[in-house]
Amino acid sequence: MCLSRFGMLALHGYYDGQKIQTLEAIQAKKNQKVIITVLDEFIEGMPIRKEHSARGLLSEYADIELWKKEKTAWEKAVVQKSISLRNR
Image 1 (cartoon, helix red, strand yellow):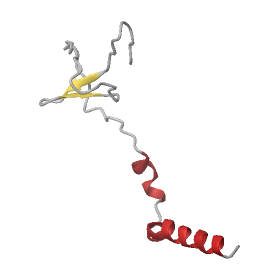
Image 2 (cartoon, rainbow, N blue to C red):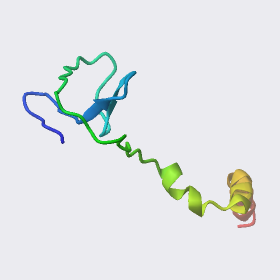
Image 3 (cartoon, one colour):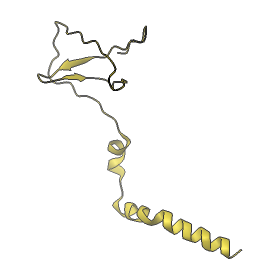
Image 4 (cartoon, helix red, strand yellow):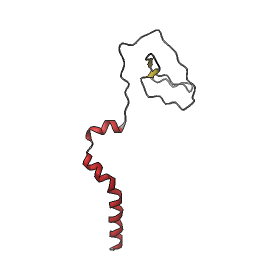
């Protein structure tokens, strides 16, 4: 839940015994002040924090053979373009 009012943002989270974990991504800047309110409520089990990255989402579709080709693709394209411009 995000409440944006008077320049404030509210996030859900929990204390894992060592540090506070947010359940949503936090959009805060370094050294930005925060207010932490501890509720007299508890969560069942450990919630799974959803973190998304393109690398993680697409890793199952990775093709190692294409990675090898991509390493030299730019150089090959520049050479081919240079040759085609000379042959005009």
